[in-house]
Image (cartoon, rainbow, N blue to C red; front, side, top):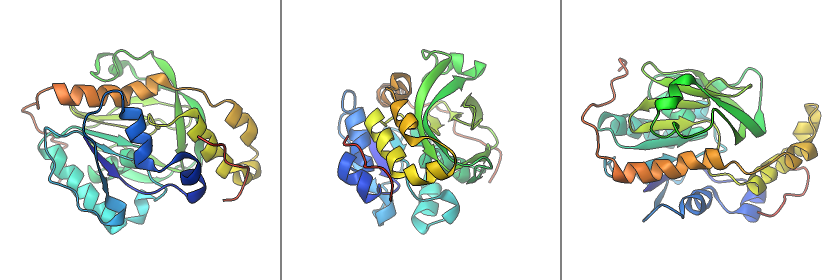
Length: 256
């Protein structure tokens, strides 16, 4: 499996909880075999996309709208991967970058930040989805983002929403899916993200302590990541290619 690391965590979170790639390694440990991490944000080159190698595009503290050269190069890699039906899972920044790469629109959410443990509701179309069909219609997930997919790419299907963001899961084809929420997160990691933003949250009229107290396990969200890894290894590559029809200050950070 390939982990495309799209950034590094702020030092206060990294010191308490490790860095982004380690969150995915730990989450995937029950099912993943060999895992290769490519730090694209640090200039490391990506290997050519391969239908036999599933790839996860991680979250980031960068913004897709910054159009960093490494990010735009990764967007081109995504287009190449989609053309050969390589298995892809985008998470948060990766979710937004996939949408951007494939013709959607990404920008700051007009209602601001979504942070905390929130309810995600599956669309009816998710009932027959290979990754989502066994999930309950409503489940909890860990979220932290300011930007969102504002316009979905042509050809993509919206398979889940939250009260804040209507595009929580996008399906691009039989082997490509993305989530705005973080299936790799733990409650401790979510609490660390909330604590880092405590001052800003107070300024927005929110109660960061209550948000941390509400953090809970999100096993159904985690199942999407685990099932992606399992199914991508066992399923043969389909013959049909993607055709979209388009060319800190704050509270002390809890230990993880």
